Image 1 (cartoon, rainbow, N blue to C red):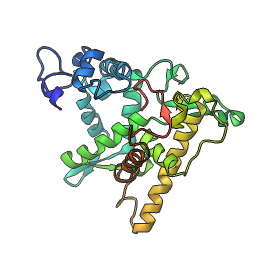
Image 2 (cartoon, one colour):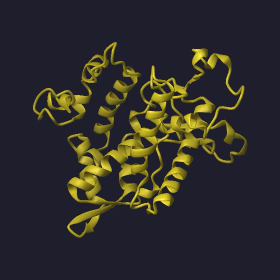
Image 3 (cartoon, rainbow, N blue to C red):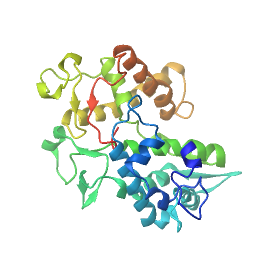
Image 4 (cartoon, rainbow, N blue to C red):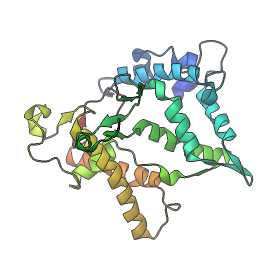
Length: 291
């Protein structure tokens, strides 16, 4: 927020300093990103180059789609698009979560690295082939597992302020999945719900053999399976918590379970088991576009 106020993401001239614009995003460099995130030797951050690349690509995405981001290429114009997809609901408005999800999936498609899995010539982002599915594929893409973790995170992050500030109501949130990232997934491994099969990984996967923690690329079959199982288990965990507390999905949403239980729990147990680093039990070699 401090950096927004000082114009980090704003255009250099003619705009308010707290308005994120495509022009402002285009000026970002890894050095400016590091300074804004207060990165130092005592406060390191993985994937600064990749994160900066996402922001630069976001600049192009904002310019390329006026349907979602308006003529002045601002992400805030997404609210205008959502209003066009909504209906009056008492004093507020009602809109289906698919409108927000579709806008983010389509509108942000240009930001993802072109080296990722593609279908029909379109880079898919956080979507990966699963070796376990290849033997049963019939159509092109049947072996691909969509995670869209960052898009899911953005979606959840936008729902709350739109509902609270604008007084709108999103329908269909129960269709959203959990976030397959290292805290949620790490909780499952640290608690023994999921385990790596014996001899499934070569010794080269363990850069520090004494730690017992493998380090793998996001495309590695073990990572794809780990993340896929995390999505499944998060739904099961949410159902069990609701059953124990006697709550409905409206009374205890998956987003609430993620924030207050699995993500927080994953962080806390990681600190207990690995107090020196607090890191996950499986390390993903991320470029900052998957984390």
